[in-house]
Image (tube, rainbow, N blue to C red; front, side, top):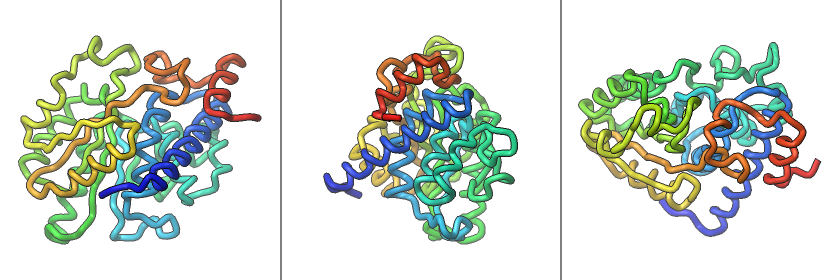
Amino acid sequence: MSLTPEKVKLLEEKALHIRRSIIESLIEAKSGHTAGPLDMADIFVYLYFHALKHDPKKPNWPYRDRLILSNGHICPVLYATMAHAGYFPIEELKTLRKFGSRLQGHPHRDFLPMLETSSGPLGCGLSQTVGMALADRIDNGKTSGKYFYCLLGDGELDEGNNWEAIMFAGKEKLHNVIAVVDRNNIQIDGFTEDIMPLNPLPDKWRAFNWHVVEIDGHNFNDIDRAIGEAKSINDKPSVIIAKTIASKGIPAFEGKFEWHGKPPTTPEEVVIARKALGITK
């Protein structure tokens, strides 16, 4: 896989629009998570606007790739990306977390049927992804052509359920499972290496028979190379450890765990966020 300079520029512009939509929806909601949605915008944009086989006009198309968001609290980036991709009106993003909205604080498939799963409790998404991939193998054999992407937070790897799924997927050699870990080094209570150290994280995945790629999660060429490499592996699942900057795009918020679970609420914070992202209103 390779990206032209023109395509990289297009994806970068799209990611900026996604970040603007994330912040505007959080400001309107007055609640929600800032750090993870902003830092995963580039990954989501690459997937929805370049790599994923999907059709917004046919969300239940049987031959689509599957994208499972395990750390459901970063759903503002999922909602914003899907809206910009054409799954529902961008204007609906203003209803985030409001009573009766389809865009709840954690994704709910009953409200938004184009989602693959509902998510909220951390540590469940990879098991769901592995189960889908195994069912696909049973139903269709090894040549169905679908890929199963699971997006996870690094702090979420404190949950033991993940490691059961990692062990099982490695044993079953589910080569069409691609996990993407948001390695932003923060979680709600602090820095990951203070709360529950994860390093040496790549070696832990390798020990369970996974192909491991480490990348800059904000570099589209890196992301492209990693996805291409993962798709070339046919005897084991792959994990992409994406090194990201929490709250990417708003320098005053970047790298601070305090922004894990709060939106800009004070007038000063709102001005800082909008100015950093070039929002002029």
